[in-house]
Length: 238
Image (cartoon, rainbow, N blue to C red; front, side, top):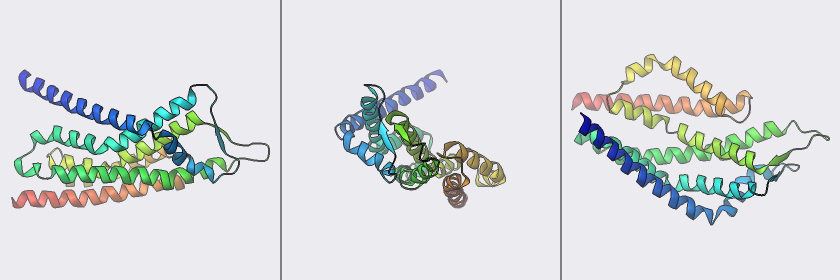
């Protein structure tokens, strides 16, 4: 048992090293374009006339360039990261199941991109509109660049990861960890968890922003249940 456990650790180490190298190379490449990326990420703020970004410490702008380069590196390297994750899991699959690894990698990447785009183009602008609507003639927004980009990058990554929720469900069903009937019985609990996650991750406390995350996740959950049921039918026929 010990040699098998050590071999799994060695395999995990290799996958982590490859992932770290891919992320590092992507981040280094994105650093040279970090100025353009910053301008692109500031765009949701440009629609507010009185909102501007400042940096309060000499190193805050430099750290922002590093954060943006890290975000770009994560997006660029995400196909490699998903590939390494599924390759780490694949030795435990049957030969027939290994054929589904490539589609899972592609779907994981596409859903991650959908989540980041959904956050950037819809949720973040709506959240900023709500939060900055409290300004008055004597109360003007003066946003520090560090907290703004920490908020923005955190939201983008969180939505990207959460949009891979269906792939996780399909994966655990495919591996036999659970089945679609068990997930259906736990539907109410999962719905509550989704709304709690939406309330925590959305940029503003208003229910509209929370629904913008919760509703797509609920739809993705139902779609993943349907796909999981189809997978089980294929297994039973085989």
